[in-house]
Amino acid sequence: MGTSRRQSSLSKSIQSALTREPDQFKKTALGKLIAFFSVYRIKLVRHEKKVFEQLRQDVWQFDEDEYKGSFHTTRGQPPLKAMGDLGYSGSTFFSTLDAHFLVKSLPRHFEYSFFEGDLLQPYYEYMSEHPDSLLVWITDYIIAPYVSLGTIFGCTPARHIIMENALCGKDEDPAAERWETYDLKPIDYFYPERDLVPEPLVSEGTLSKLADTFNDKLRLWRADYEKFWKSIQDDTKFLQDANAVDYSLFLVRIPASSEPTVRGRASPWRIGLLSADGRWKYRASVLDFFYARHKLQAQALSGVVQTFNVIGRQGPMTITTTPSEYREKFLAMIEELIEVH
Image (cartoon, rainbow, N blue to C red; front, side, top):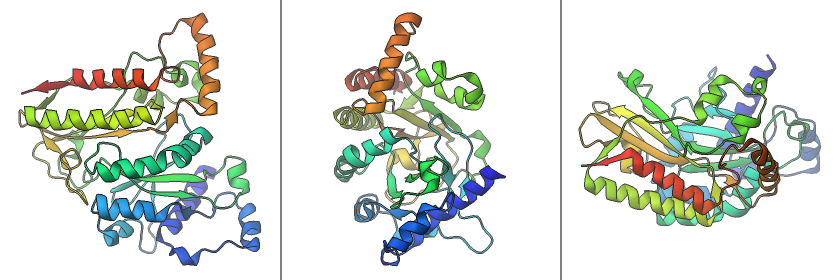
């Protein structure tokens, strides 16, 4: 009951932030006082609204009315669909009812402080110059402008990214059951979250997502491969320069006969690139690039894990690697997946 209430209240807060006109929100002393005693239904607002508007409209060519429509609901419908446990971070996940966009919370300080303080402006500039980038398209960022009891005690996350859903169009596809998804990282790393966290705190479903493998090949024509390889090199160089590690490649394999729809700019790896053998379409994006080596919590945890590794000899770890080493292994993993025709 508590979880259901929390999800319902949070989804309404998120919807309000995305559908409210900016001049309808004003910071007042009374507003701060009321907000402080909120536990689940907290006040949220768009952060850097103009930045994300320019990305959506000028770079990715989304229709703004369609975008807003994804977050509007009719009477009796839930604002957003709550999704299951998808990771260790304590993140809350929602999907819009039309499945075009996902909402992911950033509850950990070292993640959102990195995104807000270090990555947001470079991300905007990079995506503006690379409109077909494989980095996940973040279309909005909403935050709590007031401190509340809910955020203080960790009941309700205060920061959320809105991003495109790589599975949009699946629900309407007659061949939906044949869609396959893979969350790929270099598998020779030791994951402290998996190997150090006591088992009762982590579900088997979450554990199984960490070392996902693709036991096949991405069969690409030479021209498609060269464009893809150039893009993935540029994207990972951007992440390396930002000091990011632990990102992953989210791969979706769709039957070639399927024609799922997407909105906005028709980049090949968004709409589904046809494989060289004509059997599949591929979608791909780079996700979860909010872990920076220079953030304090990451450095502290690295020290703990390094000490553990001296005793346990578990091998290289995502949080003790360097951005350049992680990029090298990430690119090697992807190159191993590809078969060029």
